[in-house]
Length: 319
Image 1 (cartoon, rainbow, N blue to C red):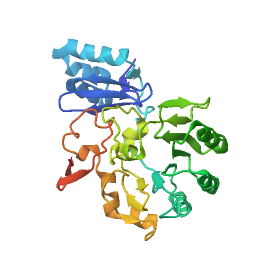
Image 2 (tube, helix red, strand yellow; image 1 turned 90 degrees about the vertical axis):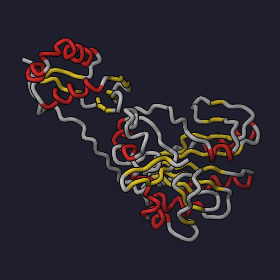
Image 3 (cartoon, rainbow, N blue to C red; image 1 turned 180 degrees about the vertical axis):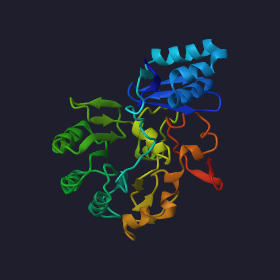
Image 4 (cartoon, rainbow, N blue to C red; image 1 turned 120 degrees about the horizontal axis):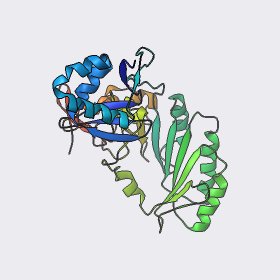
């Protein structure tokens, strides 16, 4: 006999003030559910199916409709044993001190190779370099920079370069296409926006660098990613383990933010990113931000506006 009705491990329930959601990270889907259904699901995860069913004897039709919905959407399954089905814990850990870095570079003001050395020491995996200038002489410097990264642990690199003309783009692409760490070339200040080449790793955008620097992600975009969900339990994924360095060598949480925590020419990157002030926004999880903490979609959104402390345990986004 089927004693238990189990929630699939990849399905996570997030409650909100007015309604809740079931987020299926395997099927990458979200379904809205009433808060009363959450109570039923929680009871089913802690008790035998028939015992829970008996508790709702005076609401048989409601209970049946909830169970039918969960089965139809394939959020649950019956079993005779429960111990064999271990849920995915809401726990996140990462070995990197810094996971993601954005570097603005105009070929002066700081030594980028030294910064890349330090990022590799911090186990950084994703690096974006925004070159603010370009000419034939600088092409050799870019090649030197990429060669310097060959033996690093970077998983991928994104390169922003100013658009000059199609001939220059072709030259750059064929010069660097064999560098496997380079995920994409993005040419900004382009007359057109397009994606080109068979490998789909060359992008043209009309935006100038000032617009790229200050632009925001669309906060209405929905993120359905288990790693993001787990990280968001205790951290703000937009800021957590991320660093930006502007063209002057100033170290920031985010390239568009005003706050500066040091300069790479004066202090080591490690000494800056390990400070409490630099990491403060890392731990402003969505559960701590007024107006967001009660939303059922709080683990599926980006919160990129810096938050300010209003009470010992509560923040609000600054304006």
